[in-house]
Image (tube, rainbow, N blue to C red; front, top):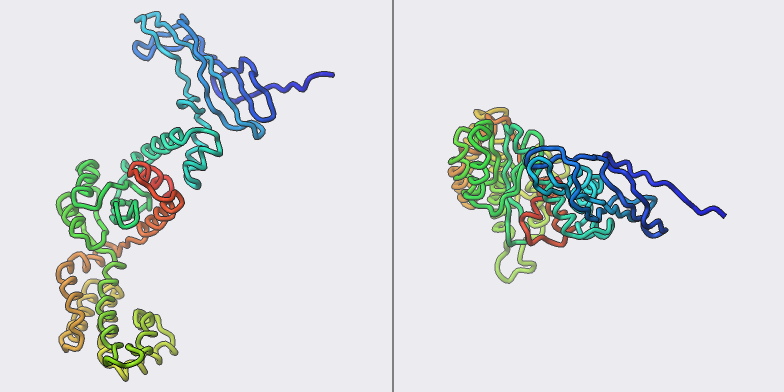
Length: 397
């Protein structure tokens, strides 16, 4: 009876099969060699054909018919005919201990899986996978940072819950993550902008961030020519804090009353946060009944509605008109809880009102990026290395 014999085709350029070492159902090992007869010296570039010795190097490749495949590279050490230097031949289809096509598969799988799971799946070491991910993410990040960025989005996210933070920078035009810089300080953002160079910074026309004084200082220092705009979400949250303070004061009942707070006011806490133009008839009637008993709550809700008008207005002039109407309500003295909101607005009024002149930008893309980063952090059960978190984050986003 004839033996079950099958020829092996690897489809690797400049690589030839010298023989099959192991052909078992559980694994496959193939001895290979380079088809380049006269490799060039990396120093002088002379083509050399003198072989000093040969060394076997194990290279992991993609599975063949579901079997893990190992390539045994008969690697030559050459002697240069020009300068006499000894050098190992190089083959572009191999990247360290794996083939280039397996390296691409490892990086692609690392976008959806943990590094440990990828290493187990392809039977390679954890450090091999992580090294490839870091190298590839470095190339991707460098390519993204070379592109022109007109709108720069800046925000922070945690590498560990309530502990270490990183500054995330996103290109607002493309939504691509440019970098994740350690810490959330002025030095962190300023250092990134300085590394990008004057020409790149000159192309940034709009910067969107939250109300961080550290970020504001770095932006004023490195991007003084650009419009600095505060993100609408964070500003509205500041505005809503005044209404929340009024609602908490209104819902309290005299000491000894049961329950200790008015349940009708408490149940309306989410409806109170809605803009007037988003309410239906039943919700509006519910609020009208509530405002009859609590006129101070009505004043706070109207004040918040006028603050929303800063963003609902068509231009800066319309926003200033809405601000005047808010000032009239606040001047009545019924809502002193809005004093902190007023102080915050006075401190950031230029960055808030410039939203109309900057094309109405938003930090929505970077908030979505932060959500993906937190999913990544949970999938990996946390990170202790910033370099690993940045590399995985750039690929995941």
